[in-house]
Image 1: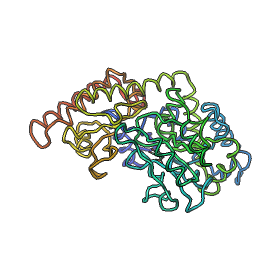
Image 2: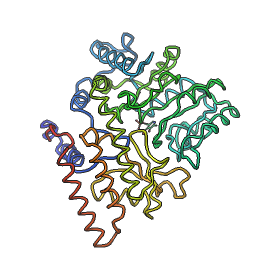
Image 3: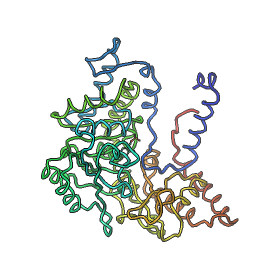
Image 4: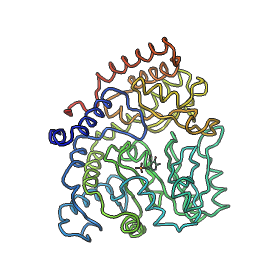
Length: 419
Ligand code: PLP
């Protein structure tokens, strides 16, 4: 860090300010986490220099002996951790991994069956503003209006009607377990590829806190930086029969040189996730999300679907009269970082939204327990209720900011990391 500060003090200042931001506030973005110093060290290593197009043992460049070892470790650890027949650890991100799934299994114009974006799906699942919606014919399925759970009858009906090439499940804002077996049955009935996008919850699978999609899916895509707590990046797990198609789809079809520093950092994260302590962490993540959801319910803020089985909860704010956008802004002012989110069948436009999404992974990494999360819920409720633009409201926000400072001082982020 001293060298960075000497060469580029502007960037060094930003790095320090970001670390302060992490330490001073509550991080509740469901897709974020706090990676370990070991992962950060691999990310900041000289492996970043190496060009290594191809795969271990079959590269288009010389000098790949060391990075080959790193990639083989990452592959072997991923296969063992998830019980997968094949792993590809090269995707630069979750979206890159998903692009490779399309490349491996579909042709432009093919039909795909995917969860509607406002009901929790991801942009890469057929949104019109994404390549997936422009190049493929995406048929959306929904959650049931009453239960707010995936409507499996509708999924089956749509599959039988449209005979999609790919069925995708896995979401960005769905708090419940997904019935992978039901999806497998439907995919088999219509001869579709079953793709599970486990970007959000693969860390819970690694920690054995929720069931694994690997035995059911033809292919599982994932990110490595969410609950899994590794570097920013993507990966793919698949059956041996699809290994060649997946590898070719990643390189040379959709990517060039792999990010070897990131692949090494993924190997570190997989090793950390194989440690028994990771199972304790993963079960705390779900217990903490549930405690937060219950605390907000007690404050009159409904959890979509009535609760959560995972690391995230989706909170319907309509009873408070405050929009998701306003809640996000006010929480920001109180150093509580979360995001506005559409709720299923949301009457408000997406940039306003009637809900917020809260996740428990980063705070769990810091050591927060269920009592702390109950406290966090009460703080969020105070912020949402604080009357905006009034002296009393401003005083309440200042009061919450002070309480946040007190809370994070007991369990700080990166306690042993210098500046
Ligand atoms: N798939 C799902 C379900 C996601 O939630 C996300 C990111 O939030 C992605 C894919 C994309 O991952 P990335 O941001 O690494 O491209």
